[in-house]
Length: 79
Image 1 (tube, helix red, strand yellow):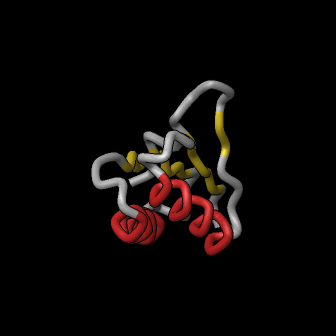
Image 2 (tube, helix red, strand yellow):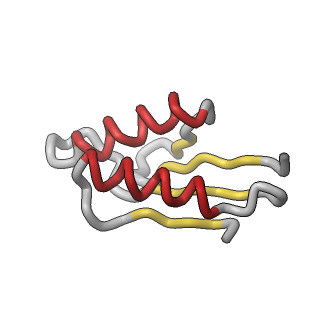
C-alpha cells in the first residue's frame, strides 16, 4: 500500500497502533502517505493529537496540515 487513511477509534492507544501498522505496511520502495482524520483541538480528540505527534517524533517525519482542516498527513520517499 502507498496510501493509508486512518480514521475511527480516536483513543491514543488505537491511533498509535494503527499508525505503527500503517508504517509497517506502506511500500517504502515507492512514495507513500499516511493520513489521519479528526486532528483537532476540540477536547474530544486529545488522544489522537498526542498519538500523531508522538508518532511524528518516533518516525522522524513531519506532520503536514492545511489551515482550517482536520486532516493531516506524512509522506515518505523511496528508501
